[in-house]
Image (tube, rainbow, N blue to C red):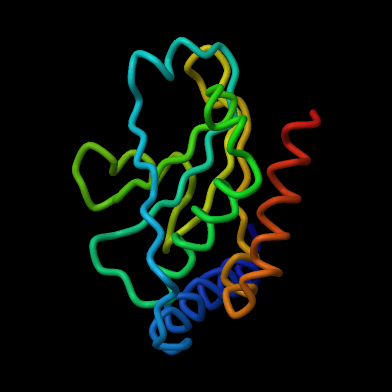
Length: 156
């Protein structure tokens, strides 16, 4: 990557981190997340879509809002797919030693909402839904974005 782009990426990463502290201090209404870890039951699915909110131990109000909005968008729009195991929703703290490998695997530098396609227990492709940071001030736009992204993956 040329030096200009590397500096731009670092700058953008820093700005996202700072925005997490500066955006609205109001926390969205808490919605309990379905915390799903890799279990024998989910491993039996040969192909599934895994939607993961990755976070660290320290989280600002905006980080909590992203998790809550994501949880709501997924449960409100994909409940049948969640029940059948076609979609798995999980929340993972990358500060835990057993989860550190995700930082390198998904190139994490802040809190992220990642959609990944898993076949036979292996991630075959993934996407970072980066726009969640820009849409966090509008729950409707946030939900529409997450719904569209996941729906597009389900069509493929």
